[in-house]
Length: 405
Image (cartoon, rainbow, N blue to C red):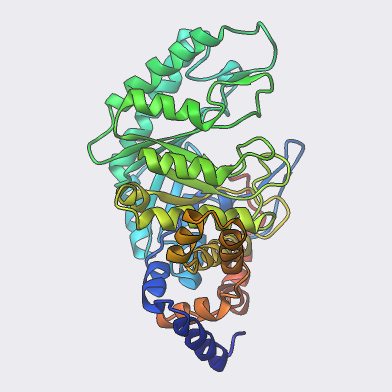
């Protein structure tokens, strides 16, 4: 627990160095991180789903768990849903229940990978009737968006092939554009379609949306309401994700994130648990873009979402840890002295430029975050607030849950 005198000392030192503490605090207080309904359900690996006690049994109980994360963090007021995992008979009732819990429904995610029909793809499937089924499901999800007052259709395709010659690349590309175009035309005004990409898995020879360039190309052809969604686990080893983020921001086509972390591939680990420096560098690109008149509009509409699969860890504590790690990365990114950094860059001072960035990353921001949370009326330590509370014991009454995605 950070003590009050530590907070006061931290503020005094950094304000003496020229930091506008109030600006940084306001930015952190206004941050919104969307949590995923499926992140509260049972999950596992390709080999096994591990069941835990207290797991939500339906969409309403997922909202209850999300409300607990919002209670202790204060920056998670929206919940993404997945259809049909979260399908209900009365979406108005779901919205009202969410509102009573202090929540709103976030992105709506179609499921285009789980049905047997999708073994060879969805929008890119060689058979017309399967492609039609996938399109109709996406149109259904747009109807759900309207019912739950969501402004984001978040799209990920598992489409690809396992073997050379299995299917025709260009024909699949044509099918994909046709399907996306029909769905795009059905989007209500003031909503967005976020297109996600993935380098491999579940297909291993090729993926129809394999990288940010492919997703960007489709977005350009579709129109202004289509933007790229970056999942931090969906890249080849060594890929410079901050560079991708900066490029998409500059092009005005960065729509959102699925925050998680990975060691090897799409591991869906807790955000910032493996490579906190990469997360910090991404946060730096985002916060810097907010202050650039050319990229401000795009940077400020980016949707921050968590997408992770808690295989062995407890669901709610893992979500809280991810939110805390995101806050830490952004707090550090806001400490980068951008004026000094720009001068060092212009002078070609490589050593000083690198040092300024690393110095911000290595700064202990726990006193700052403690102060921010106190001013928001929260416990300075969200995880401790949850563990000391009664909610974790209360949900055990649900018994052993079922697979939630």
